[in-house]
Length: 404
Image (tube, rainbow, N blue to C red; front, side):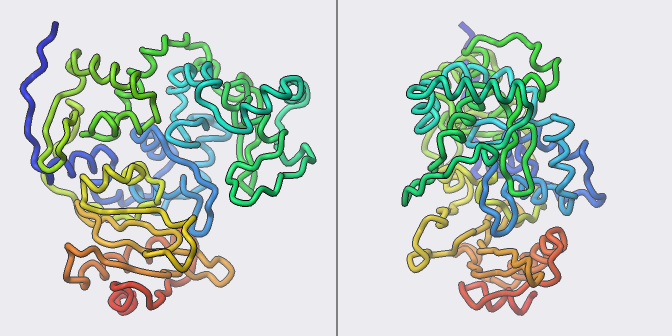
């Protein structure tokens, strides 16, 4: 049996910079406007770009590229999905864009839909399998289909997030099992479903389906590269992998020397280092991060990395919110130094800062406000908004308003 190397001890600031470098957030942005090649490389690096329908600021999947690359043209990311199909949609961390090379490695999840899918998707397949088969035949014979074309009424069930009508649930089941995939999205962000064989590249579909253990091992390997340094839970969470499968994969990758054991000061639990991870001595990034950005989506991890306690308050009643509705952490150097509640008021061309708070470990708000004001101006330009307006809410609001 291969003997594991001695456990290396990493200072917390170094671990933080390793994590930022792995996520493409340690360097200043490029000075030239990125094209599809740079966007494709970024999606390949992150491996998972989470999709969310909330559009109060911008669709979430557009924000990670802006955070890392600056003011790119959003239609270029759309182009990676359609018509190029360099990326595809599937359930990874949540609904996400993934590089198409990973499609063979999620087929085990498609094959195990009975264990991994949920709710109305499974119910419609169990109760109305003939209807599911009918919709698959309709797409096969008639071409791409939207759920809205079925003419079914969405049930009005208070408090239910996934209140799909049966046709939408059936299409989502076929999407989950891999029979259908998303050919594109409409302007209203509705999926356009089509046969997977008519959408994804033939050379990808021709790749033999790997055994489940091999696929999970590749997904853990990919997560390790995207995270840099991570606990077993971090590695498992990136693709929402089953506990036992992920634990076995971590052990096998460690045995092969593809994961190195480390202890990070203050983490209080074992961690694993990607041997190829960049050990940067500095961090010069400045970025506003989507609530669904892969750097911050696992809340316990960002508390370990940054001492930053972050909760999404979209579903919290307005009177009970602490920081706001759609709150973005602000990264400056290697620290999360502030958070802002943002809204794009497109009707009047304004990027509204509805609240702004500085973190307690940054007692001097002046430099934070100046850098944040510059970042907000960059974001407003990218979103084609004319100006930034700061509302008087939060302990950074006054200083930020003066800086803006």
